[in-house]
Length: 496
Image (cartoon, rainbow, N blue to C red; front, side, top):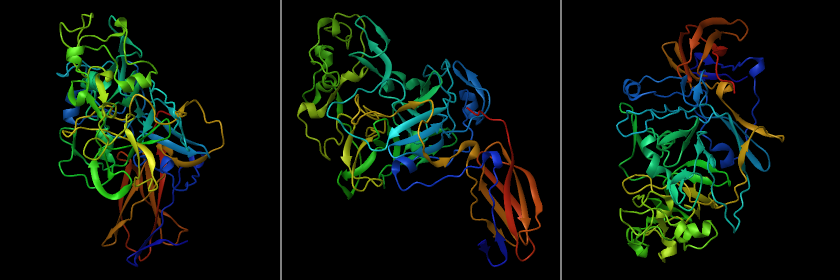
């Protein structure tokens, strides 16, 4: 045994005791970004939310709540709670809820009409292919989760589950699909997220997660608002999510030259523009929604030319379409054109990403290169279409939700109620030892000390965790002293 020596006077030994029933042996995987890029730092913390603007202003969050389908009767641990793997698959278990404070959500800009549902624990098991492939024939993205962000929150595509049926807007998928960010962003919280039923998710720039990962975002704790940093980005964005095809989504910043890590950092520019006549695109204000953009025709394996009954609604009142409804350009994702289809070459001075919103490039995690999607934002830091990925997957989307794991796996990480207790280097001053450790929220802890590792003295009991941190200060006046931290109880929590 080699205890940590502190200034030759006080020694420290820390013993993790979770209780026999909860003791978990974790095997650390070889370096693989699909395994070790998950944001697990705060997995021992409860999910919490602000119920109203008033509670947000006062800083009063709650850990239990009920509205619509979002019922959380007992606290639930945030985010990814387990990561495991086999030769072919990566598995995560997640509550689907982030560790930053969520909410509030409203249906109108004046924030007087509450959103109909809160989020809740979705008790997700999801698998991703460990060896992704990219088929020639591409697959359309579907509704619901098409991957997961590294904080365990669901990734939804760029649609809001409504389309133009020919006479009105109905739920489902069609030729004219509503843009989720354009039509639903009024319902997003400060983190640009909301929920479908109880399923919390992002459609666009996950700015609060980016702040947690250090991806060029500032946070104002007084207003609970996030903003893109004003300075130039100094480093490549981190991995923010994994898509069900096994490829990563990075934040907005990558290498200027996709194959040269020494080429500098730049914002990745989307290859999509509005169909407003610029760059030779169709001007929908003049033509109406009478044709599909080329990328949408490819994605749907059909002609871009539409029959009259397939036309979209007017762009302006009295437009060329027979339908009486009208919506401005941008209302539907098909209101965007891909520059590559208009003869504009991809490059550092034009745009960076393909029609799937990615490129093959080197990254810090993949120095030999990988295909990667990127979050796209404008020069003003607003989300830019197609936001995370395009209408189709680049790779083969074999990842999926599961109800159980049906093969032998190696567990790389366990969190939540079984989060690993890790102690920071102790602070020692004038024979006073201050201990700080990664605790499990809802847990109480005992601190004991010994001079010989045989007889132990209780220094403190009932030390409660503050969020997912525990601290204790103890005087130690003898020459050598060992300390032990033990979790002694855990409050009731959502075990699903």
